[in-house]
Image (cartoon, rainbow, N blue to C red; front, side, top):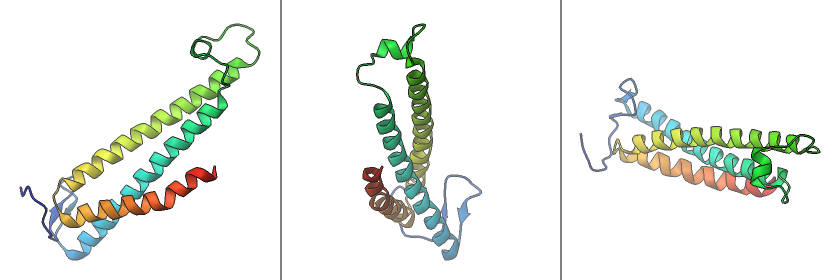
Length: 138
């Protein structure tokens, strides 16, 4: 296996069945990798939005102990705990998706095919450029 970047239309990405031997196959594979990079940026932005919503859903006077152990007759704080837990679960799931995508993209780059590397860079750049202005909208 070559351990330096090279330009070639032959590459095996992530799995043996994703074996590319033609320029058309390489172009489609680079497009898929670029779209996965865009999706990575979308998930990263989604995680930030969920965190912001979670912080806005919890009143500032609510302590951590009250979130973890609600008392009987807490005057609606159980609903706050439920919302906090839902945001926490959503953020955890988004984190798992982000980690899986990140490692998959890292392994794709580790094929050392320069076209795949450029696809990851372009996808990440486009994703950041398109998605991060949306963070301010919500």
